[in-house]
Amino acid sequence: MGHPHGVQAQLAWLERLPASVVVIVGDRFRYANAAALELMEAGQGEAFVGRAVVDFIHPLDLHRVLARIRRAEREAVSNPPTEFRALTCSGRQRVVAMTSNHVEHEGQGGVLAAFLDMSERAAMEQRLRETDENFQRIMHTMQDVFYRTDAQGITRYVCPAVKNVLGYEAQEIIGLPAAAFYPDMRERDALIAAIREQGFVHDFPGRMRRKDGVIIDISISTQALRDEQGQYAGVEGIWRDITQRKAMERELERMATHDDLTGLANRREILEQLEQALQRRRDRRAQSPLSVLILDLDHFKRINDGHGHAVGDRVLRQVVDAVEGRRRSVDRLGRLGGEEFLLILEGADADEAYRAAERIRQGVEEAPVDLGEGQVTHLTVSIGYAQALAEDRRASDLLERADRALYHAKHLGRNRVSA
Image 1: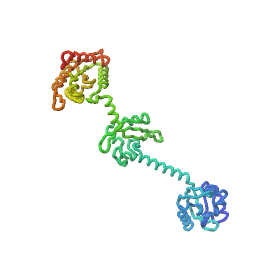
Image 2: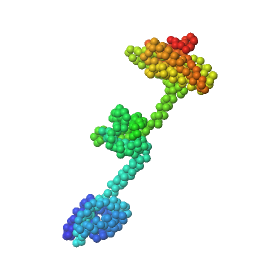
Image 3: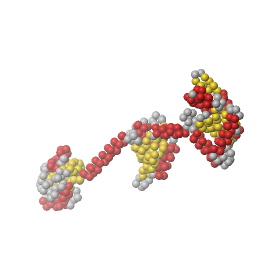
Image 4: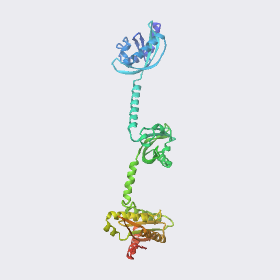
């Protein structure tokens, strides 16, 4: 820009640039193209051209920007881009990126500076930082475990809450296959298959192994991730430790299906098991034998009347132990109520049922019963048995015959087996 005509030509050319360009001589703006005036909200330029540079730079950035301007003036070098906060004529703050070079302007050494408005990008970066900070804050405070894996099942992210659940630091897990923490790979395979088929799962049950080796119950809610081509790229989601909930559910189920006193299946449960056994028998092409025993303690009322119900309860548990010790492991025992019990023998015909009943009858008769305070007695049991017939459609059909057999055993004098 050494010759006036050349300067004017170059300035005309600068007016056409979309980038903001200014010329600085000394400490003042000597020229600003239209884009620069618009950026600085300067109208026709009177409020900008001729004013001091320091009026338009944020005080905290001023020292750094002036040092670059002085360097370009003095050493005739190009300064690499730098970002700083500029103040417009209306006082609005803008984030700009500036590059600067030495220039001769009207016979004086100055600086030619070009600006790009980075305010939107800076605002977006700030929003991203805030979003990331919020995300990290949530990840550090949540109780559930957020995780992400790639298409190969490698853990790429897991939140710090995993320490409270599995005992591992997040850094110990990232980079490892998620499957490494499953005690049964079939459960992991079932999860991935469900996600691939549906795209997501909600409250999917599973188990994981903690660092100390303890197996915990988990519930997983997750979805598939897709790449730009729509291909499966992994999963992300949340899983939570539901060990206590599952333990409570199992206890509620046990309470609903088991007798509190003896721990045996209660009436409802043992009758349901009998219905299922009959259904399995009907479903088989060659029907296998099925028999039942109904057991009733003889003269048990005398125990309750003479020693109280607390002793009676203890006696019942002792009798159950005697029966349990003489039944097959595959047989199922339940309490029908009071001192009456039902034993289901799948695969046992009438002869086998009779032998099983005799074994139990003798075992109960021989087992000493502790009444407390040094008192010991012996009890007996009457047993009726029956074998399932082809025409049996309901459990009651079989039970009625076994119950009649029990009544017959009682009628014959008790402590015996009858069909």
